[in-house]
Length: 151
Image (tube, rainbow, N blue to C red; front, side, top):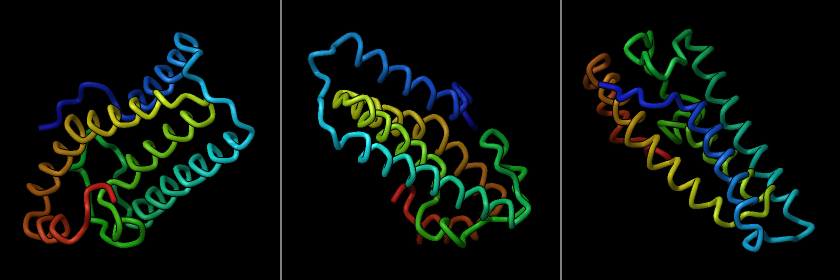
C-alpha cells in the first residue's frame, strides 16, 4: 500500500524550497565559486535527461506514469533507462535537487537531497514496488533482482 504522504513532485518542490531557505537562514554556509552554475547545469541536464528518457520509455510502452496508481501499469518496462534503474524519474529528481544545491552554493542542501531520497524510498518506492509485484508477479521479481533500485 502506498503511503501517499506527499506527491513526489511536491516533495521535490519542498526540497528546493528548503534549500532556498537554508541559503538565506545560514548565508555563512554559502559557497561562492564561479564554476557552481556550470556544475549545477550538468546536474540539471542529467536530471531532466534521465526523467525524459524514463517518460519516453513509459510512453512507448503505453503504460501509466502515475506514481499513485502503479497497479494501472499495462506493461512492466524493463528496457531503455529502466535497464539501469528501477526508479529513473526519482533519480532524476535527486539530480535536480543536487543541481539546486550547487546553483545556490549551499553545501547543506546536499542533506536535503539525502532526506528526499530517504523519503521517496520509504514512502513512495516501496509501495510502488509492492503494487508492481502484486500486478506482475514473478516478472517483477526477476526485474527487481536484476536491476538496482536507484543506480
